[in-house]
Length: 48
Image (cartoon, rainbow, N blue to C red; front, side):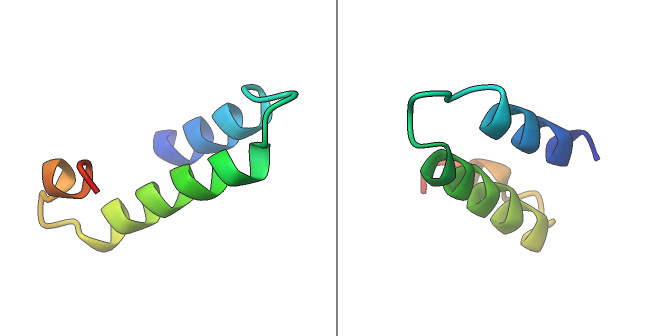
């Protein structure tokens, strides 16, 4: 739950002038991939 909150907060709070949708997409993809691979592959999914 904390992860989801962090993503929304970072996308809404951080990035007023910058492209928020792009940054949000990247973060969301990251979280989604991490959630899809709950095999402890956080380190492997990070370098991507």
